[in-house]
Image (cartoon, rainbow, N blue to C red; front, side):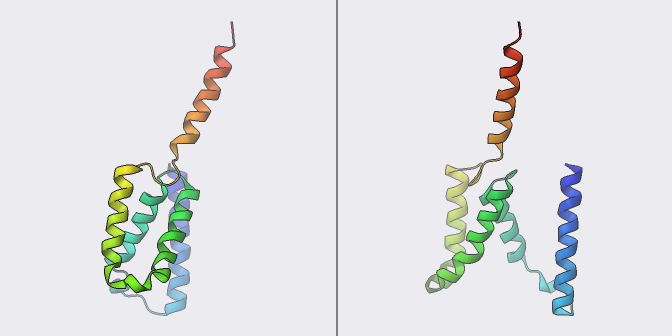
Length: 116
């Protein structure tokens, strides 16, 4: 967990450097609640513990507003409804991180069960 936190912090630092170099000025008001909500939503929608799920969710949440410009005034309503539906019907996200753990534990149990 510590290495994942360190690696994530490193990537966030690199992104901050690139953002600062591109905009040449950083102000706390540059980052609104919407950016924080989008990042959290990417993790929730993709599935905690699944990098592929988070990447897919990020692509969906970034590209969907571009394709749904006709519904721009209802964007937050649609966004909230999708998150509520996702939490009710698929709380583990698009791609669950739990799947790998069960497979590994099942393999480990199969090897130990074969011994006499």
